[in-house]
Length: 431
Image 1 (cartoon, helix red, strand yellow):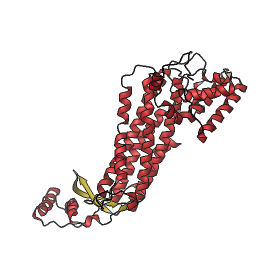
Image 2 (cartoon, rainbow, N blue to C red):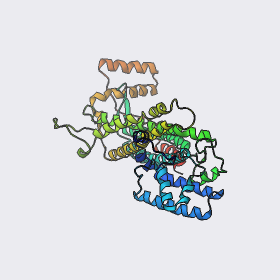
Image 3 (cartoon, rainbow, N blue to C red):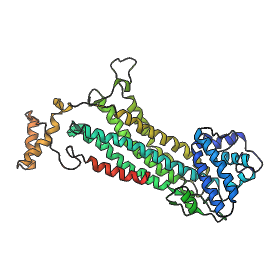
Image 4 (cartoon, rainbow, N blue to C red):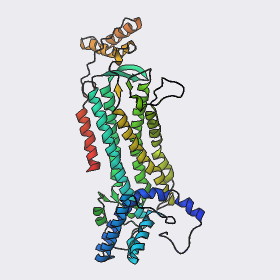
């Protein structure tokens, strides 16, 4: 059954090509389609297009479908084009002509837009919650290991003292920055397009503010053309959020892979969380973080895929937009899985507490020595030259003492302030 059927069926090859994976992907939209339909028919009753009795019958039938969906018993039957068609088909099958009234004042264009915005709103909430779990883990580790020094690098050369407190804390605050982009995507998705119909409104006196309230949207997409133009724009905003978080996670995964290497030996994990080699008995490979790095690097292409798909489309709905689901649906799932896996792995991380006693890290402390001399009254350039000559002559001996007290440094991590920043943004999404 097709909502646009006019007494003929398209060639089977055409149908298979145009429908693609839509039936499978649409199962994730089913609960939102029912939610949107419930709000829509309540509004139709309020403007006289349904009677109170018809509304009650339709709401009861939709509640039964919603129960099917939650139990996992809902399917899109062969020959049914999409989730919207399946829901309407079930209503018509059970209720007869009353079921056919549900589509008044609505197009599949605004119907799928509502479904997608409700879906993306929920996905962004789930993403924010997964980010919070990892953020909390990173902050806990930052405090736990704040006194354990490690080398800091520039150009991948030994540079200045750092600490595990700084390292873990840096990724926590980076997630706070990423969360701002997630919040912006959430705000973009949190606008009601219902009532825009095919993109040009309706001659019915639709109460769009009523459906906005019923569906819990923050506001309307007021202009009906702009509402349809938000298809692709919303996904692009979500894609940017996915890419930002994935970038942070990919960097973290790269660090762990490097720090696990025997040449560094900064961190390790229990044997059961690593993998081995078929030929080298000594190997303990960081496969989890390598796969995480690879997945997150792929996720950073999501905004570009969306941009290329939507770049030259004319105004109004175009079927190309259907393919956005192929890009965004797996992306949110993959990113949340990666965030949760990072949280699980870091729960078991083992930190090497005595890294900087190795002589190879002696030169980490040259800047500390320069600063010590400056604080004692020597001009900076003289102090720099003195320590530089000691390094050249092989007479430099580090004190291995660090005194970094300004906010955000080794001895003043500002953990609580970073947490406040993160949770202020999180509140905008979850409240």
